[in-house]
Length: 181
Image 1 (cartoon, rainbow, N blue to C red):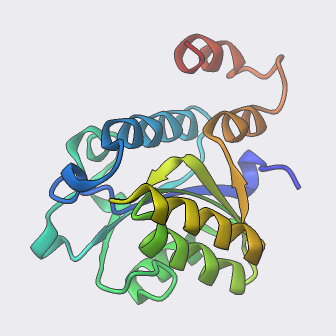
Image 2 (tube, one colour):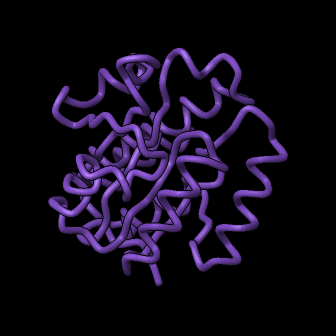
């Protein structure tokens, strides 16, 4: 079950400026999400960002927000994007059967979204080196639980190489020059 560019979308969950300082290895998290978003754009894969209660918590970190249009972000109050009507409708509108997930917090919004999307029949891939939480133990427990429930755990390079698919793809040179340094 490979991740195919024409069947997948990237969901960037709640990487919000105010929450980042308390998140473990937050700079690495942002860099990994940025990397995935860049490869998704190279491959013309739809990207959707969620924001947990943006009126109180504020927006996504500008590094990521600047990569998408304002319309590509959706606010929510439910922890699971799949349970938030405004977010769920946007995911459904993408019409993609494979959802690749990165963001935070691993044991709350990421895990609840992944499990609910899986329950809805989506093929769900969580990028283990592009998720985090305040406590690394919570991230480890979330990864273990998601894996046990049938969510596919992948790395960002696995996603990138599967989206590209072949070394003679038109995007491969850009991918190798910009993303594999």
